[in-house]
Length: 513
Image (cartoon, rainbow, N blue to C red; front, side, top):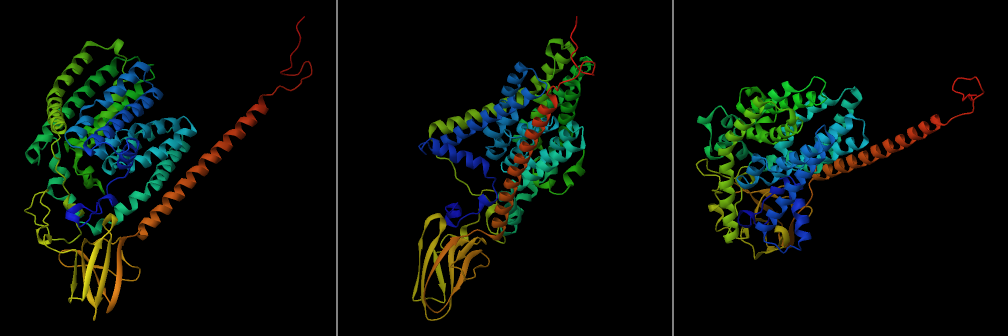
């Protein structure tokens, strides 16, 4: 990040979710940092892909799916078209990670509904991980499949309260990332994230005339139509199932989730996207993560041995509809693979939204035009009025050591984008210059040494405290639950011990002649 924006620095990792990059860091350690970035990221993505399959298999094995169906379903989840589109066409590293966590959240709800202590812990940890993987996916799941499944499974108020408490505790654990990411957006050009290109209503399936980027929609639209067609086939299969089949209710639920999310993608319910924070999702087709999860789960509940011909025909039609989107994804994957194998230099692009709030940006510029031309010839340090000594030396992670000698107070400007986490010594206030928003401070008369470094902000310290407290609460919850279960087991054991009884008493063993 210190090298971003031609050495001006970037606070991007205050806002990017950390979990995908932590996983990549572990892969880097395990491989002794020997792989070039393009190959290591491919390896990390493979790890995430396998993790998504294992998570899906764990969920399907605990649900009512048969063992073979669980294995096939986990494989299908890994190969789901939008799942691969995220990787090959969009390079959506964070959203790709979310695929591995959604099955675990749902599995935790299932176990909690069966009064399994592990279920509550799994909800807390997997929901926290989902929040720290990709916020738009976490938000969409939090208003669609997660509350719907809780209400579907929670037959008792205690289960409902337990699931609500678990998600709240998971949010607390994720606070170390969430709080700074939400609280510090006023210091960056966050308005770039909500420009017309990212308006949700421009990406509805039923408004192709407004699509800002038709190419990606030509891949996503067939996927959505195929899922809708498959849902129709699932409905036919549902009608053919026996009334006493325990999988009917589950299948009905997952068909409903899939169809409900598809309706939201079409734009038929525009009010949904006007709810607080929903516009920040940017693309309604991010719901494909939930749709593919629900569709695969539903397929694994279908008794294919008794499948009627009508349902099979509908599934064949869905597969045919899927072909154009799959071909586009495959073509893109082959193209990107050739670039990687050829060893061509990959473009390294910064993004405009992480420039300081107020930095002059032209609306006529494209996403790749950063508008750094006014800063092209700015030196590392400038003193105004001119000082006898005014020099700076670069340190690690964007830090600077500054040496100033002046006969009068002078304003020192450093070639670093302003962000409140920068500090110059402990008592020197810093401020952004206008209009270029660089770090500046006033050096007093005389000889002074200054050190520019990044420090933890109050909101960071508060968020660390919330996360730490949440972890302590989770550990205490587990300890109390474990102690309570041991006591219940002990009482149950004592209650089942046989006590001597007199002949003729109820429960006494009377010898037969």
